[in-house]
Image (cartoon, rainbow, N blue to C red; front, side, top):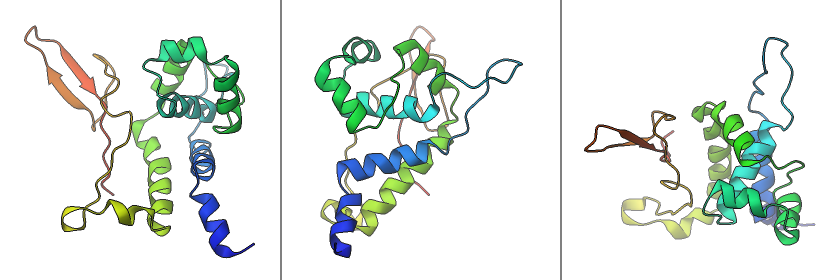
Length: 171
């Protein structure tokens, strides 16, 4: 098998998703309660389930939760996203809330680096060599409570605040 063929397979959807899963496995598993028991479903499976929800274009966690057992969706989640156990919507929210948003930069950077090395990003160069990219998911969800430094903040006339996650690609 030639080097070129091996390189291309790491840039395929399966290769990039496997890379994401490997990176998600590096996120520390928070322990539960004072007994320090591990959680039922791994952080990696929760993150990959969330990624599957975005990439399979579900409009909500609830719809993803209600359709995740349908045969073609279940097969994609298992075979493409390599998820052993898909969490319910509430459990996924709870688990993802435990993750420091900075821990999610590593998977993004790893995938970005692979695309850069494979020259996949060359065709997206735009004005002054800047990259023009669209990625599903930014601005898709919002919260009045949960936020990080990268969130956009929307101040409403009634005094409430909505936080909208944004992607920051700075090093």
